[in-house]
Length: 303
Image 1 (spheres, helix red, strand yellow):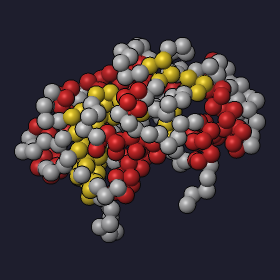
Image 2 (cartoon, rainbow, N blue to C red):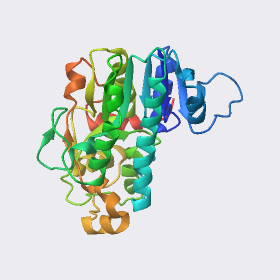
Image 3 (cartoon, rainbow, N blue to C red):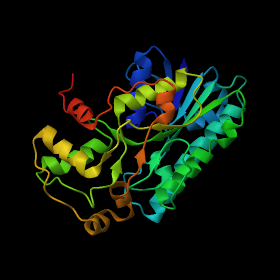
C-alpha cells in the first residue's frame, strides 16, 4: 500500500513509518516543513502548503493516517488548549479538502483519537459501544477531533477508522519514561488514590494495530488502541519498581499533583478502564497483554 501519514515526525508517527516500510509499504510523511535529507533512503515528505497548492500530490495513496496535533504533554493554559484543538481540527480540515479534490480517493482513512473521549471513572468498563462521557478537556477535545473526520466518513468510497489511543508505552517516549523517572530517583509510589485505571498499550502493538486496520477492510469506526489488561496506577507503579529494582514507597497526594501540574494532572489522576473489543473481534493479536511483560521488554538493551 501507499500510505500518507500526517504527524509522521512525532513519536508514534516515526514508529509507524518504520513498521510500514519494514512491511514493504510505501510511506509519505506530511509535515509543516520539508525534511532535510542527506540521501533519498527515507520516506518522501510533503508539506501542508504543497498539498494545498496541489492535492494530486496525494494521488495514488491507498490510505491516509492522521496523527497531527499539538502535544497534550504541556501545561494546559487556555492558550495551549486552544492550540491543541486548533492544530487537530485544522489538520483534518486540510486533509478533507485535499481528499475531495482527488480523482481517486484513498480506500481507508485512520483518524487518531484518544480514550479520554470516555471521561474518567474508577468502576465502569468502556468498549467501543460506550458513549462519550465527561465534560473534562480531553473528553471534549476527543469528541471534536473525531467529529472533524465526519465529512470523510460520509464519502462512501473511504473506510474511516477512529483510533482511540490509550497510554502509549515506549522506551524513549510515551508515558513510560514519565512513570519510570520517579523510581529511578528513588521516589516512586502511589499517585493520588492509586486506584485510577491506566489503559496502556506497547508502542509495537500500537503500530501493529494501525497496520492491521489499514490492511483489513472489515474494520471501520471506533477502535480502542489499548492492551486487553488495564491496571490500576498503584499496581503499575509496583510493577515498574519491581522490574527496575526500585522501591514503591513514596505516595504523592492529589492536591500536590494538582498544584504542580494544574489541570494536566487529570492525565495522571483520572483514568478509565478501556478494553479493545473491536480489535480482538477482528482477529488482532496483541504481543504484549501484561504490563510487566511490556515493561520488561522496554527495559531490554536496544538491539
